[in-house]
Length: 290
Image (cartoon, rainbow, N blue to C red; front, side, top):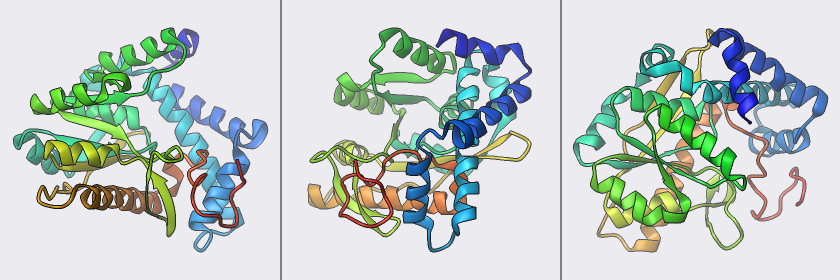
């Protein structure tokens, strides 16, 4: 892992990112890591608008974008705030400023674009942001990944102390960011619509927002052809504290899932399609079992 983090530093940043893109092509076309899952997901979600050739092109570009994003993540320690802000501009920054002025928010994004760079850009722009992170099985790898995030000014909240850490961060008026786009374990999710499919989705972001009385701020990041990025913040999803808890959690979860779907439809090559997103959804054709 240390070697993989070190290697991009041997090249200028833009060259390292482009080499990463070549590795993405190798992963998709030669090694074919989860290629079948990627293409099945694309057919299931976008088969009505993308033919087979378009789905293959989109899947390949998704792998390229993911590999480039991992190079950018590995490079956080060498970039510095100034260089990060050279790479990332903002759209809808006023929405982030609004929720910060009101005392913080739950931020939701997905495995979309260079999501780690999105957090670094927010921190570089002066937004106090903390990530809720899962713990890797290898503690040294876990520490290395979190050190990269800390080097970019991102606070870390381990899942093991999620509730305490999240509420403490919100009390400080910070933004607490969660990735909420993966398939929820059986019995752990709520069912909401995602690409017209009833989909098991983690409700954690909505639960924390409801309990804290804080809005949900959905955002995502888009890569430009010159390897710079635009971070997009949408208007906040407000919480209705008078609503019944389960009903409101379901509504909030459906709302941020719909925001992610809209972003994916605009930029389908930016999402990580290789995840088995509809594992526990009602049976439907096109997605391999298991």
